[in-house]
Image 1 (tube, rainbow, N blue to C red):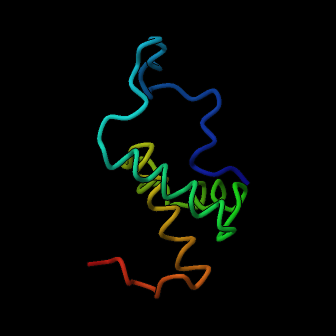
Image 2 (image 1 turned 90 degrees about the vertical axis):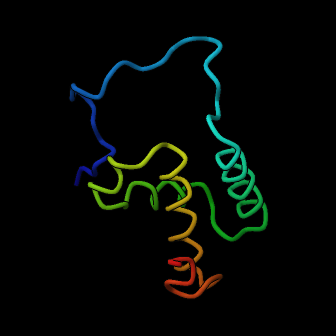
Length: 93
């Protein structure tokens, strides 16, 4: 079954920025999300496959409305709830 991230052959998503000097991060919080991801994987809270699956499992409208690192953060939060690290809804406020 195809998920929302499977956009092979689709058009209308705009050009991909291939500039060699393109900044990998656009805000400080994005760097922190990367650090959080690396720390949690290193601690064995979840693995790369679980993380990828959590991103791909986001509801289609939420996936499309989110930036790259917003998807990462939402996936991390979902995994933390799924793994019992945080209580369901704990981060909602």
